[in-house]
Image (cartoon, rainbow, N blue to C red; front, side, top):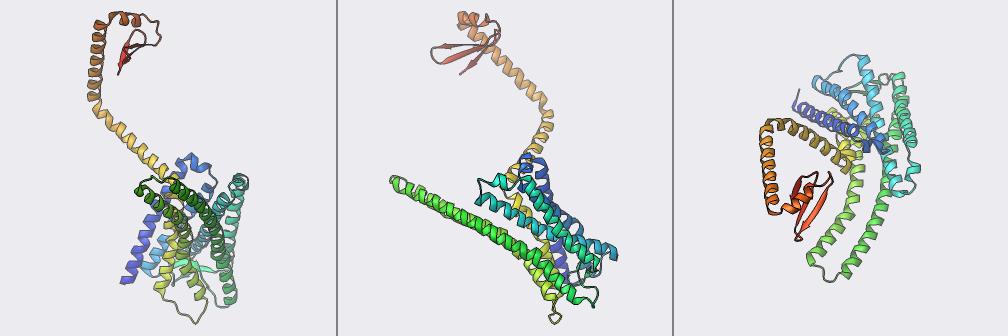
Length: 386
């Protein structure tokens, strides 16, 4: 195994570890937080997360074995199953991102009618179409024996196993990538650009109000004015950065692999096998970026896993507090002694008020003395609040 193979193997191993940890964390947050589960986008996110997890556990390890051994990992039947799952999971991930973008488009552009347009029933219908669309192509490919091991990508994927059906395979490959990658990209661009347009419109309205406020506040400190202008600039850039991240990661991860698959159909164009494996690793890297782009960097998920961490730390602190029971008991004893001492001094200084408080029939009373001290009684016992 050469230097390039070692680098590609290490790169893919790192992708596997990060993808597994991040997607498991998203799954834990989803199961822990009832608030996340109640939201309609949570259905699309959990579908995307499960697809990424299966891709990480089933496909990436076999591709790693293919890179190291430079041969097909396992028997032909295993390779066909893995190739079927890869085609299904990649298509399902793309369409899940398109469904998420559609949900956010409806939420931003039609906020008043969102609850009626995007219900659990509607989300289930969208997921049903996603699964039907994702399953149709790999089923056809398996039936026509177009799934096997490809040395160019060092993985079990779509490939032409016979030479007599080349035209049909070319048509199938072009249709598959057009109705998966290209369709999802068109939906992403349309919906997110509409969201960006609405976000910029609201930013302009906020900017107008901010500038009018700064004009009216003539006595405002220059540093405060400068801070407001900087926040105004960051507000304009925030929506653009988010939209660019959604679309940019999709193109950066999937476009090299899809373009390589289409160029591969031309017999006269040779493709470097190292580039084929690298493009495959870039497609796998989408399973690493998705948890951060769609879930973990959002405030709701940050709050959830911080709650989980705090809960775990609290349990540990409760377990460790058993070691300090003696110190705590000593502290309580000293506090009771001090309280009894204060009550005794109070009884000596103002016996009439104390006797009146002590004669209460289990009811709480308060007596104010000189406008400073409040004596609260509860069943013939008094406490002093300063």
